[in-house]
Image (cartoon, rainbow, N blue to C red; front, top):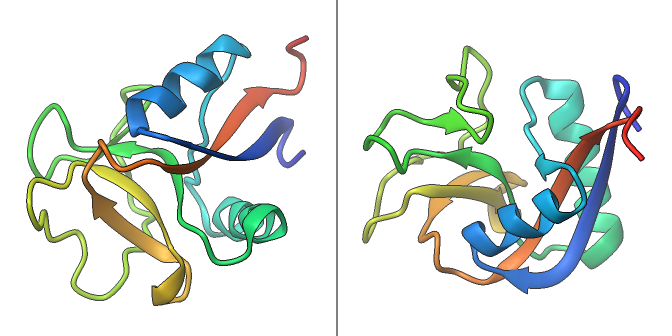
Length: 126
């Protein structure tokens, strides 16, 4: 738990949409690392679940190319942790994951890629 939010990393491989649905089934959303502290915590959590595997979190530009927003609909804001040269939309990449081969920075990828994911929920939720 960090900032009254509970996080859980899943090693189950899902598409971005499948991961978002799985988080919703538990009353949460894909995780939203909006600041460096949360981002570092989520990277630590991912590594504890599956070493250097990539993991989805809740950022995408599906509603407008280059306009990244969190899964709650809010704009990305001033904080980001993009890997060098990212986001690059190489081959229609609209969803974002941790990119372990680039020092755990962010990478845009095809939303249909099946990888692990990280969910968040308010600590007060059952």
